[in-house]
Length: 219
Image: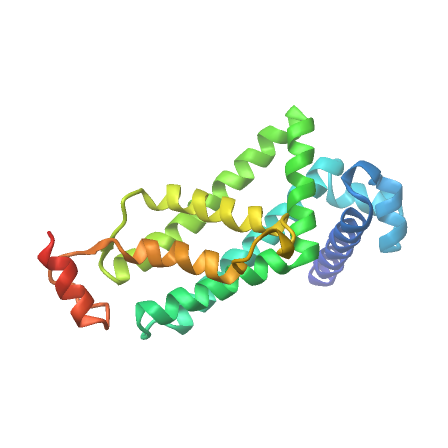
């Protein structure tokens, strides 16, 4: 019985989050209210407050869900190419992040949350903490890739994560007509620049032996 109740509460929570995301994308956070979210999800306001303390708590949960899903997809992509070479991985990562930028709903949600944080100092503090945790996780992923391929980037992995996050979120709010260079090529250039870091001595993770030998000769 307890398990069934927990499952029902999880389903209620997910429906409320989905309703809030849909309304945010269509109308913006400024137009959100507890009532509108509950009506869209098909629940009473009592169901809302059984899952969230207030609207900001729901928005943060929405943000955490989206960012966690991004990290999970990124880890799965990298794990699937654990035996591949660096060029293949760079191309896969470029495609992944350009697709994120092209996701209209996800991009609109990200922009709405950032704008809300700029306007609301109380929300901003919790928003910044959530984003910081995401950048830590993204930096960990980048650091693992750099280590696996024996690269020594010029900046700490977390700073690279900040740069990558700024790049793809920036692309998300730009029209495709604003640039002659595709989003995928821009992100690929970012990862190729990372790959330009010099490999550690004795590392054989890269398959491009000629490039590796050349880079080692400059150490």
